[in-house]
Length: 320
Image (cartoon, rainbow, N blue to C red; front, side):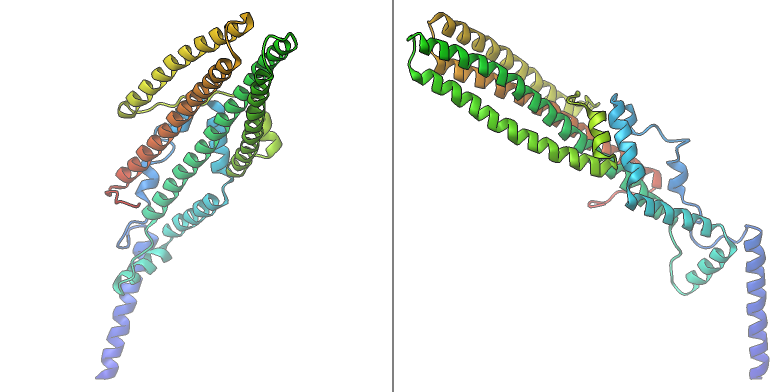
C-alpha cells in the first residue's frame, strides 16, 4: 500500500512539474507576484516628463546632475542588480522558483520595489548635486562681492591718508580705514577657503575632475532661478523686494557719506558704517537667492518622490 501511495505521489508531482514547465516555457505560468516592474514602465524615459533639473533653465546644472547620476557607483550597482533581476524574471526557472516559494511562504523578488528604490535614489542624488552647485555659486558671488568692496575700501583708505597728511583729520580715520580693509581681507580668505571646499565637494558628487569643473564653473555664474510653488514663492518674493529697498537706501547713504567726507563735512566713522551696511545688505541678497534656489530644489525633489510613489500605486509613509 505504501509503495502504491509513493508511486502516485511521485507521478502527481511529475505531472504538476511538467504542466508548470510547459506553461513557463510558453510564458503562461506567471508566479504569484509580478515579474515585470510596473514602476519601470510608468516612469520610463518614453512616458515621464523631463526631470526637473533639465527644465531649470541652467544647462550647466543639468549637465552636472547628469554627470553625477552617471558616475555614482552606488546607483550603478543598484541599476545592474535590477537589470539582472529583470532578466532573471523572464526565465522559466524564476517562475518555478517563485511558485515553489509561495508554497513555503517565501515571497518572490519584488522588482517594483527595487525599481522604485533606484528611482528615488536617483532623485536624492540629483538634489544633492544641485545643492552643492548652489553652494558653489553662492560662495563665488560672495567672494567677488568682497573683492569689489576691497577696492572701494582701498579708495576710502587713500582719502583718509591724504586728509591725515594735510592735517585735516586725526590718525583715527586712518585706523578705521585700515580696520575696514583688514576685516574684509580676513573674510576674503575665509570665503575663498569655503569655496575651495565646496568645489571639491561638487567634484566628488559629480565625478567631474577638479580642473574640468573649474573650467566649467569659471569665476562666477548666476545662482539658478528655479521654479518654485506659489505657497513658497510669495514669502521669498517679499523678502527679495524688501532687501532691494534696503540696498537702495544703504547705497544712497554710503554715497552721501563718502561725498561728505571728501568735502570735509563728514567723518570717516560714518563712511565705515555706511560701507559695511551696503556690503552686508548685498550679502543678504545673495543668501536670499541661494535660499530660494535651495527651497525650489527640495520642493521639486519632494514632488518627484511623491510622483514616484503615486506611479507605484502605493501610499507614501513617513520616513520613506
